Image (cartoon, rainbow over all chains, first blue to last red):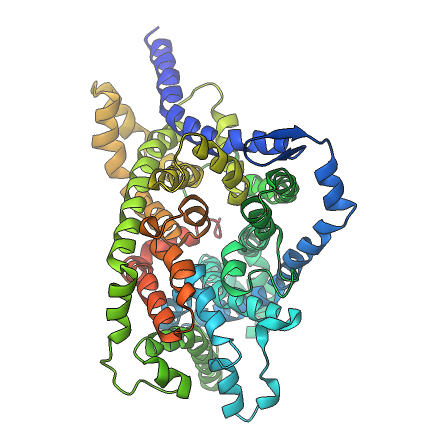
Length: 296
Length: 277
């Protein structure tokens, strides 16, 4: 009797406890989501809404707009494996505990703390035609390599991806270092007893145990290259030259707040949303607290 | 693990790590050095070191010409209020998800986590229209509300993960004591959750401090701008004076770097939450 009453009271307390959070998230995230889907079928300037059916989507897919923007996201996506390997290498080296390893670890993460805005504006100024990079190349006798970096698509991507790498290395190295430190020592000792050398141990024993860390790294960075590029693009290339480095999220901003075509921007948002729902699904699967016994 | 790497191997490792460290630090070094040079000094040779290491003209100009103290005050106030709202809403929710049984618990929690992956740019358009309808464009309130709301899912997720590991009997004891809900929250749950609160605070606060999109969309006048917005727009409008521009970057970068130096431990812990299982 007492038990069931206290349980019912618990249920009420639970509902009341989550209500403010649900209302806030509902008003600013869930409800907008629903209206975005609706507005993707309309021509909308913020005040007047006119139903246009699939016109926005036709423009996206039949006219091929979407592929141009997705190309930018895809270039970033394809750059992930290289930085993944670099982070792994750095983490493995840090894990050897050579002198200064703790200092290096601190230094590597420093760029990750900075705003993408700060990093973007800084990198842009370094890669200006008479900036420090070109001057440095000339001083090193590599004048042939100096170029107007941001005026052609390929070199603009080089600058963007270098910046992305610079800000990701420390984060990745820390993630993998945590993974390496979490390995039970018995496993390593057992493989040492087997007489396995350093390299063999690395590839046969250590790296296979990093699968959770690697998948975590891939999830956060994949979602970054599809939904997080805005500040980077805004500060470094503004999507140019032309629209050749414009990713999906930057184009949503442009068509909504520069062109004022909110219906088209909504359709773009829906496409982006469907794209990242795959990532969301991975995240739910990875982080579902209820299928595990918590306490990490 | 006990190392089996030879001395030569260790030297090679340290060498590689040093090269990586130099490339991680050089842009920051360039930023700092450039902020201490005049424009003519910079144009003569971008690679040079400052003639006088004590030349703080650029910093003085930042404060005088761009009303930097005001931008800083804006950022601090917006971030602090958003933090208060976000935490006040997330704490009880996280507790309920972690420790209480109620109908719809699992479904709402899954919805919260799924929200984490939804791109911020998707909300910005309807939120803009919504807040424009109630006349809150170019008002700090819009930025604060959007920050607080979008911070909730991540905060709830992290706090709930932490609270699940708290011993249940302590909380039951608080209930048996007849302590009211708010008292239990304040006396027991809040103090026990401090480590998780610190971690989530660091991530939210630096995230908001560094955010460009939200203030860019919702704020229009320079008086309302945040430091990050100022660094991206106000200052770049005078872009020909590169050392001055870079000085703005140094000042915008300073608070997150200080936070990092003070709270490294918490940052590492938060970062790797998902990596080790």
